Image (cartoon, rainbow, N blue to C red; front, side, top):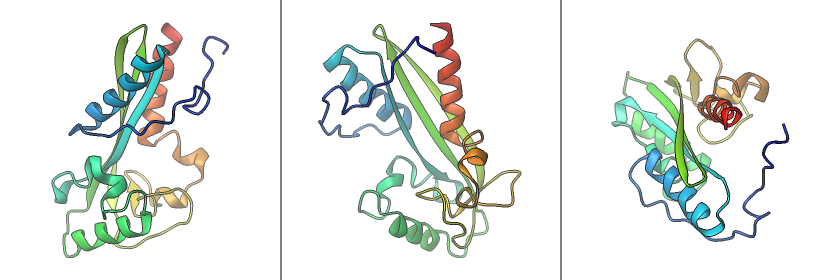
Length: 171
């Protein structure tokens, strides 16, 4: 509704790089939200998200976007993941997203998790990141084979955002 107006970082003139120095999604989400809130004193929402693979002890985790070294190189990240999982039968994984909200200097966090498995090869052209390798539980298609309308309600971000929206309705 008209209770909140959403502004991007560009809208408020924020151009700083925020170094993610924490060791958890919760910590990095909090760090980013706190940095922006302290600078502008505006209600702030920030997230940190990534893929956790059981057979790799939770990797790539907080390093999901730069797993192969270069930030945001999806092809290299996917190739490295497939190499690391070569010969492994345990393909269980989950996407996790943590959203931090700071409103009136009070912080609340919202987590979304979607469990699934890592396929042995890429499949699909939609989405980004690890979507062509990840099949969520209860489905026979990867995230990259789903439309946004199919993916959003079951995705880690979608689940976390739903919790955030429900909370905002109560403020």
